[in-house]
Amino acid sequence: MLGETIKNLRKSKGLTQEELAIRLNVVRQTVSKWEQGLSVPDASMLVTLSEELDTPVSTLLGESVPEAEPDGLAAIAEKLEVVNLQLARRQRMERSVLFWALVAVCAAVVATFALLVAMGSPYLEWDLSDPETAVAATALHGFEWLFVRAAPVVLLAAGAGAVAVWRWRRS
Image 1: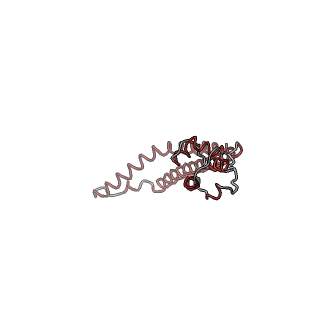
Image 2: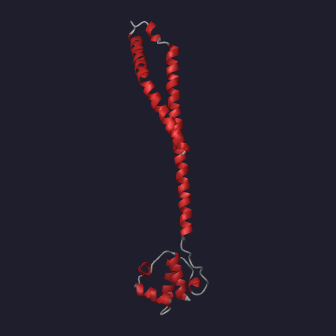
Image 3: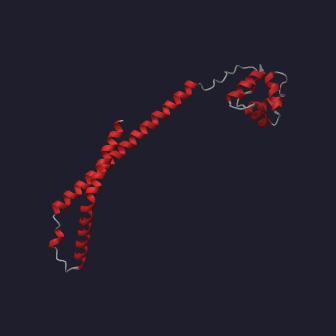
C-alpha cells in the first residue's frame, strides 16, 4: 500500500524514480524497492518524502490517493483547438486592422487632394519679396508638387491592398 501510494504520488508530480531519488539523496533502486514493497523508508525519510511529494505523511501511510490521469489524446486535441481558435481570432483582428488602415490611407489621400484643389495654390498670389513668405510658398509648392505625383500611386496601392485584404478576410 505504501509502495503504491509513493508510486502514484511520484507519477502525479511527473517525476521518474531517478529524479525522486536525487531529490531524496538516495539511489534509484531504493525508490524502486519502496514502490515494490520490498522495503520501507524510515521515519525521517518519510517526512522528507512527504515534503518532496507535497503531501502529508498520513497520506503516505494510508489515506487514499487518486491516481493521476495522463492527458489523453482528446485533451490534447481540445487544447490544440483552443489555440487554433485564438490564432484564427488574432489573424482576423490583424486583417481587420490592416484593412481599415489602408482605407484610412485612401481617405487621407483623397481628403488632402480635395483640400489642395479647394485651396487652388494660393501661394501664387503671395508677395514673395518677404523671405519668410517666399520660404513658406516654396515649401507649400514643393509639398503640392510631390503630393500630386505620389498621391495616385499611393491611392492605387492602398486601394488595391484594401481590396486584397477584404477578399483575404472573407476566406
